[in-house]
Length: 125
Image (cartoon, rainbow, N blue to C red; front, side, top):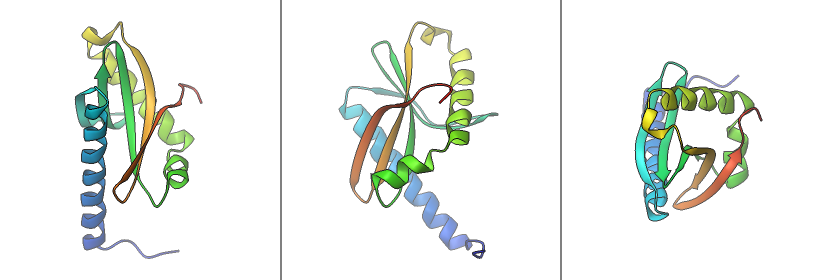
């Protein structure tokens, strides 16, 4: 079993996560999305990014990992369920979004490289 991360290691990881989310938000804006929420906390979990383009809402999970495969693997079944629950709660509080289609995306960040995986999973998967 590995030792618990130090406070300095946790701060570095937090900064890295914020940087990845900032880059992901910029990428989504470049693709024509407006960002409705960043790091949106609900009782069911946190949503990294909520983005809207037209009548489409994308709930985006941002993962900073060594490569794309590691990022995708980090979005486990439990994480997908948590994100789906948080997304449902977010939408239940936004009647103005009731007629929008939704999808779940992953943005894998590795260094300065970003890879957007639209529609990475569906509810119940």
